[in-house]
Length: 177
Image (cartoon, rainbow, N blue to C red; front, side):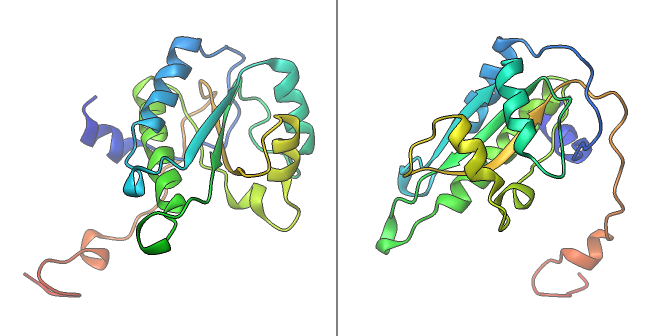
């Protein structure tokens, strides 16, 4: 598939995964794609931990309530640091968002599936802090997202999208031509 095809066909997958490990070479390619993302003022505020050890995955899944991605054979934990860049502004949210999208596209390109889980783990119950403790993440990093990685047991569902004309225009908001 070419890049545009991957972008147009990628879906968030929330189903079960096949019990097949993801080769380290593929996981490294996915991580490299994430680290290749742009970063505001090149501060490189995003770091990644890939977990493919079954025992560590079991510990992580034991703190995720309600459970999600418990059958995934690998998980990428996205870390962020608050580092000021231009005019004392921090672009860490933009940085890790770009890294996550790069990884999601690489995951599909390598014939796996995933889903961006952020709010589920960063809500007031702070599941992210429990996962960070399991992974020995230093206090100056925030665990902001998890991405399960694996071969899907079923096809991802296709969400209904609004028509192009409802969300995109040329030469002005709502312009018709």
